[in-house]
Length: 131
Image 1: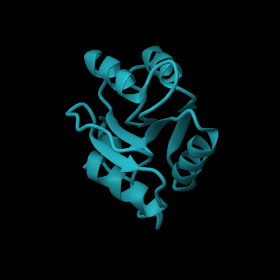
Image 2 (image 1 turned 180 degrees about the horizontal axis):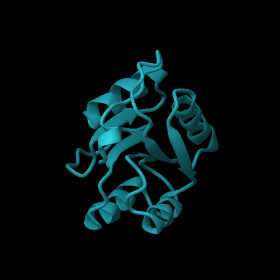
Image 3 (image 1 turned 135 degrees about the horizontal axis):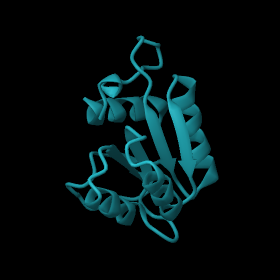
Image 4 (image 1 turned 180 degrees about the vertical axis):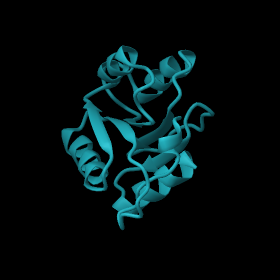
């Protein structure tokens, strides 16, 4: 992770630096909601509709993201399959897994957030995994 991305801007606007975040979820409403929350506080966001699309985005520029927020259950390539592939490539990003279901613990993910969640839950979880 780069020096500029060591802090997370809060909803109150504490002047922290902007992060580049990839949001991956097959549910458009979730993808749009998470993206909206992140853009609203000043982060750059790119989106993917499934794990395969996210993998292609990451492969095109492996060092361009600070954080991946991905759903656990998706078609084509699940969130966990995506994480296994990016960890094998040593891509230097933090991973926040989101799901409406409980998921098995894994040392490959940096944080977990259960859907549905409030914006403050997202900020708190991102702060925990970034710091």
